[in-house]
Image (cartoon, rainbow over all chains, first blue to last red; front, top):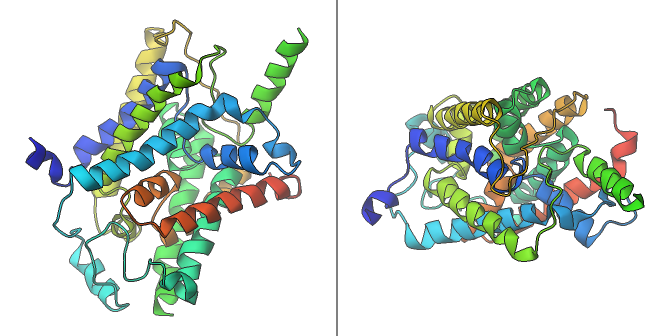
Length: 187
Length: 166
């Protein structure tokens, strides 16, 4: 059983399980599924700085902070108890492309060759981790949600603004991955 | 009455630019949040084991080199649509007996501009906000910097909000 769980899980198992989070959160406590709001609650809790956008009772949304802390713990549990020693298998075309940028280590979910504490202080690492992270935090809040809030919760509820947001997420990703990222990775 | 108005005002503020809001009017002790911690743990395990949190999988997705991520998002949305439909059809209540309420979303231009900006960041970091938490859990400690930067991004958005087109 454990050996079975240690393998990478196929999409038709993981997808429905992720989708089930929507009704489970609704039925457990009338909570709409979403993750990026946790970043806002952290701002509201730690440094509201008199900004109206952060002046609300974040404790009412404390459930969301427990939820994301659970995701962190889940990551730790999956890595320590259900560890799969085999490297991440990717499309050979991607492996070929990435090898050209010196990315050859597939033993972690994060590409260790370019995302580590040393590379943080290089231009490439700074762009990927610091600037990338900033865009994620800024963009998700500007869009009013992320992949979970818009693409999964919003689409589950058939909200067309969420469909627009999801299309824009994908469009931004396609532009970055195919047109801009090759330049950044060549730095 | 005064308190009621304040609660309404606060809920309205919390709903601003947010998808996931606590719609419940019930007051619970803090340990009720352990339910969400548990759901989060299970969710995090699925995230890691299905490699949704892998930078490589995100790169494949944006290069149309693998069906994996499309299969996951597609089947998750389908499961969600069926679940929400069933909840509405049979008027299913929460475990506390509350009527389930989901706020509709109104369109604003932020969903386009913000969506594009997030998309750029998603392909760089290989992670949307959820996977950032899971990646740190897997031991990629440097991603804590990415998370802090994302919090900073949210904070800057909050400060600039009134000046941005919506």
